[in-house]
Image (cartoon, rainbow, N blue to C red; front, side):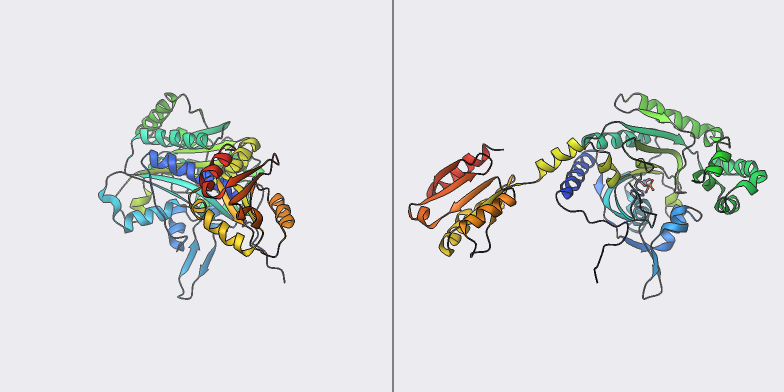
Length: 428
Ligand code: HAM
């Protein structure tokens, strides 16, 4: 029986993994620079955490969660997103003593969606959450940070879509109007939307069925229900963003997010290099979520970048450049006897721990002829081969062969470190 990975859950192999390391490192650098601190929460949480935060009636909660009952009879769920666990942790660990906190996280999320280009069941996010301020400058600053992050990894040509959903009261008024608008059309709605109409009408805005989308095209919009405070908040966010020449955004009054917890500012970043699943990142404010979970009323905002989609949108030449920069060059160590092998080991010891650009690999099969070792070095695309041959060692020498130019140089063993470094560093 062949064992296979689960559908929609992918291995990340070298050299692709170098892209992941690059993105993660770049993200850490930018985020730490902006004062965000890493937080790591468990991958498994109580199901109710996500039901309550993401919302009953959302696709994620209704159809996409990996939920199971554990041996103790508890309902547990693999995290489909990172915001609710951070909120749980914030409250549980009494982090509110600090009035403003900024967190980031990098890791896998799980949603049982139908896999397609840009959509997998285990996917990875770089997420940030800024907790404790309702200042619209934080909203603008989060969007600025997001676009800096994307630029830092080499992405261009993305679009930022912006909207405001208003506060809880505004959302209630929108829901009331939307229900009144849709009720006479009930029979033309899909089965899911008929249920949404009763349970959570705002979710109809997120329906992917064409006939529902057509019905909703002229439906009441969030922007028409903003109270004066929320309108002012939204205008200030836009004003701030307009002072940032590197941030280009467009307003999208039809934007709905797939999670219920959002209030006020919401945004999405899309890229034309992606197909139907074109959102690379998304986020927004969630000013009521902490209170809903029993914490003090604490406004907050955040976003998450989908790493798979970000990598898909990166230009191929950029990816090649990252991979070749990240992948260490190989120095293959060929030996002609056990004595030579031992000598090579001794001489190379300090190199193997210190070198950032080169990796040293010694031939482990001592029955292999020198010719076979050279063939293997070639196959492994070694940049150099250092030949520790018995004859040369008698003369206190090692041969260093440049595999690209086929040039060979004899290096004196007691000056090995210095000369070896000089020769190979010229290649960088
Ligand atoms: P989200 O829009 O559900 O938001 O996901 C954010 C990003 O994760 C998406 O824009 C996309 O790039 C990626 N993503 C989502 N689902 C998949 C999938 N099945 N396959 C591949 N990539 C996917 C959130 O998760 C919120 N927690 C963001 C947030 C943080 N809001 C406030 N703070």
